[in-house]
Image (cartoon, rainbow, N blue to C red):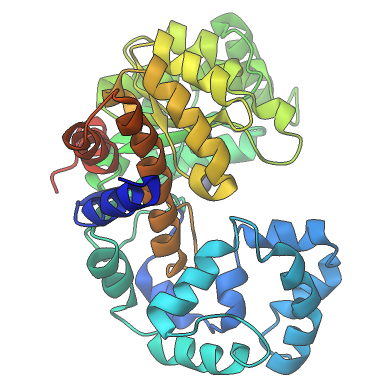
Length: 412
Ligand SMILES: [Zn+2]
């Protein structure tokens, strides 16, 4: 059978499987439908970076997304930029959304205005259900907006660990304490008790995980942390730098609490800005120090996909989550997956997370790309005689649904 036919058959079969969307930044639907939308909603989020890199000035980008300006003027600014980003994998889900949800084969001079109208017409309650549940087959989406006030039972919050661990001055510490206990903590240990209470409150609000970032944290030292806390409390020190021994210690305590409270710790690795600071290998001592804590390592550490793979191979408390990867680079994702199947037990890989905020329609295109990437990897293995089609379907069911469901303890 030609490879393309096999890939098509696999994608078709994957599209009937239930999906846990293992990472989003989706707000509640009521926020999305309250926003003004148009063609540029489809070029919001990740493609914004490509627009700037392609040469759109930050000032012109502001105008492109300024809905008080005429659509035609904004399209004129955007049009030459689109020509340079349209073949990129960040842009593809926008074109897929235009076609699948609004019936436009392309986004161009002829379609940008009617597409905007169609999007405005569809931007009403029910759009999440239509896109996420009906079109994508998503049973649950883990979402990070540093909030828990969702009406949608399939949107499940993951909260930032930094809420409690990244406190740099007394006002922040006192405020966290007042939120939990009506008063400021009097000691580091009291602050830690309040932190645990905060985690327990989150759990009652359906939170299933905490999110951290892979960075150059220091070795935790209780005495140093105690001293810094006292210095802030007494006013001997006004504020601490971004990375500091108090943060290292609070993070360490929270990682232990996460294990005790049954919360998964999701970890951003790679990609943004000066990505040298986000190397997944910064996590190795932390992962080793907390064997009871379950770490969900995001984004394959791109571009350190091999390093992330070896981390997934070496540590039983690590899962590897392909959220965002499929649109960063389909080809990098296919090649890393070929290597990971060699190295990493297949029950430790999580197949998909859309990683979007306002353009909910793009989740479908991203999911389709994830299905394609995984189908290509499996098809090559089937051709080599290393697995058969049934194996491929079983693995896909694990990656899209069973593994994230089990890791986060979801009852969907
Ligand atoms: Zn994200």
